Image 1: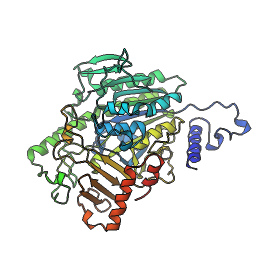
Image 2: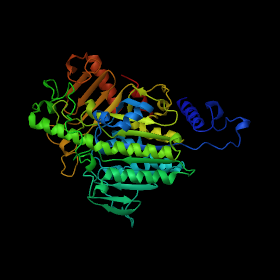
Image 3: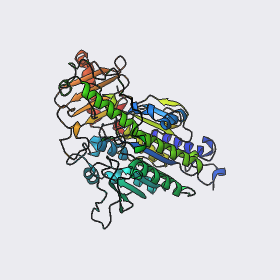
Image 4: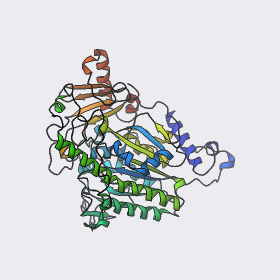
Length: 500
């Protein structure tokens, strides 16, 4: 029944893109005599802007994204299955939870690009399926941690993974300068000139991809994956002096006064003192400065789509691979926790039939992006897909039997000097855990046996761990639900997620 509803919804979307109302298009085998010989509507284009470590508190400083919120749809509870770059990206590409992708950290033996490739992640990605469905596909910017643009993987030229027609990707773009791009199998070096600033280079190349697609009958999917605003927080020169008095937001959890109820990994943190708070404020200013170039890129992309007449057939999706804490719960700067600062990220969509100014409160996850892109392209998800398509939300509808509870899972990575997120594997970082998150609660189980429970309706800033007050039956239910989700695959993830 669900499959038939999805198929009907897809044909309704196709109708909206050029063939009239929902009743004017029927699934194959159901068409009336008057529909025979009708030329199918062009599939929609998709532009996906994926940022790195972008947190909700940066959106107030991004006027283009604020404009997208007014004109489109915002997911208020978009939750990462793991707040770590490589694991999140593996989930985004495949629609599978980390326990099913096998990518648990940024580097081997438990993660990184080589593990993603060895476990068939490239073939399981949405890109080959979209390409097979007639899309021209492009990836620009960041791919997976551990990817090296010069590697040939047994070939004669720098390797381009399957499923991508256009490939402008680098490995270490965190400093924003002095990097190599694999440009469709040709290695190109960019230096330290202002025009080599990586986010701007990606913006320019993205516009080239859009212009090349203009006039073609072939739809396109383009992902621009910036390294901004990931550390070391290098803004474009034109933005380096902006926001001189800005401070990191002082939410109720900032430099939390009493952490005696927190797990042992966090209880060791002393209160933040003046030098540490000053560093947090300086880092936040530079993060705000960094996202100005991202925001400008979004504006240029949307302006170009409109000038070329492509905006009516194009979805623009903006989001992040994970959040980032800066001062919350006495944590100086990083991610990987189950707190909202790290797992809850902005996702905003504009495009055909997307209701303006609409907000979705249901829990969405990065598992849902691949099936969404595939449904927009007329492709059904693979049986192993753990997420569900967000397309009904994009039309202002509520899908039946949507999840009520999201899974968050994290394996603490071993220390590595090559890891750009090495601060999160140091002593005092969260240990391995699994967690449940919905609008009522955050429940966390650590590998060492410790537990956390926050009543999010009374305590949205997750200040008071009241796990000790839970009735045994309730605690057992949450633990059983968490076990079911951490062992689910495909449809069983949907079924388990409907519980609270």
